[in-house]
Image (cartoon, rainbow, N blue to C red; front, side, top):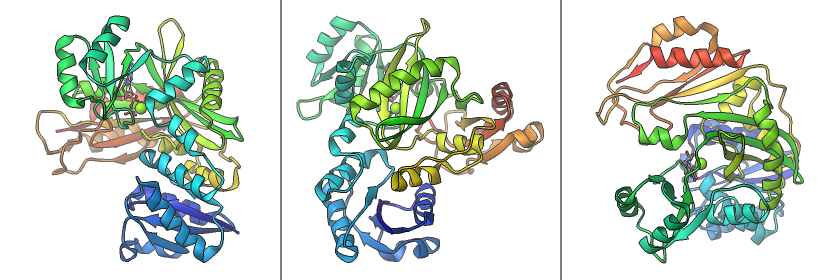
Amino acid sequence: MRNVVLVAPYFSENMRHCVRCFASLPDVRLSVLSQESAARVPEDLRACIAAYECIGDPAHAANIIDGARAVAAQWGTIDRLEGYLETLQVPIAEARDAMDVDGMRAEAAKNCRDKNRMKDVLRKAGVPVARQALVHGIDDVRAFVATVGYPIVLKPLAGFGARNTQRVHDDASLATALNQLLPSAQNPVQAEEFVRGAEHTFEAVTLGGRAVWSSSTSYLPSPLTVLENAWIQYAVVLPREVQPPHVQAFAEINAKALAALGVRDALSHMEWFLRDDGSAVVSEVGARPPGANIMPLLAAGHGADPWLAWARLMVERTWQLPERQFAAGTVFLRAMGGGEVVRAVEGVEALRNRLGPTLHGMKLPRPGQPRSQHYEGDGWVIVRHPQTEGVMAALQVVYDTLRVR
Ligand SMILES: Nc1ncnc2c1ncn2[C@@H]1O[C@H](COP(=O)(O)OP(=O)(O)O)[C@@H](O)[C@H]1O
Ligand SMILES: [Mg+2]
């Protein structure tokens, strides 16, 4: 029997699914650390959870440690301490360190979380990354621009969801970006040269630091471009071929990067740029399952649940996912027009008719819901097809047919 502790601050749909995946593994006794009171645990999860601790903000490792110690007091030992949320990777790893639980250490988690530290480690290991600087004010930024020239990117050191990521192309846009980010001695900001290229991901499963599985998706276009243009419908494509030539060429760089960062037993999610001259640049790494609908795309492409595979990976240190049978793609639907609220979704029936079985899933925006500020938009569609070209054509049908007003 393995004693597994999962940090699940709130019970979103995805989090509930994750709890069920861990609980369904053989010989697992699952405990949950949450910010919700025990009374608010969803009914359908109660039978899955063998011990429950309501904890303070898990952004502080001390709260996770308190909760895990309370579980350890009942169960004797803790074998795993896990959680998939990006912002909790460091505190969860600090709690593992403090309680000597097997899994990613805090040093490695910090390498994957602090963008400046990440690129320092990667550059020293000979992995291609953008030139960067940690800036504390306008003088630092000017000095950086004097070296690399415009455009540059300014962003928070430990951001996610491209929140507050700013492309800066001249002195005027620099002033606007600085007003958003307000760098200071206490709040340094990450500056990077702007990399021109197509943005891709690389998901890798490593066991004991050795790559045992990988996959890649393409962002169409980059999240930053999506945020800069309200009319763009953002898409992510999982090709039918698991390792097309550009991905094969990148696998070695990915492996070198993960080794340098200290990623050992993980499903990791890397973002990287492929430049026109064929060279690759690593953008960032998360030592956790990917977002951007990549988990549902893998489910569509492989006909199995990658969340369950991930839970098994974290607990048993094994990886099982059937071969890919389909290419898959997702469009993140973004409302048109300047309003703040979704008024209508048009073309749903036409889309069903035009796509038939290629239409794999949808989460349609509800009229009345506030407009999303995220590049993942107000809702999504997932398509799948035996060929990548079939997915590309289906994405075009989605663009042409569905309208969110
Ligand atoms: N140096 C860069 N050059 C070009 N685009 C960048 C650069 N850094 C970030 N971006 C763009 O901004 C997006 C968000 O930045 P990222 O570093 O991935 O932060 P987050 O952790 O918020 O995802 C990226 O997906 C990419 O489109
Ligand atoms: Mg990113």
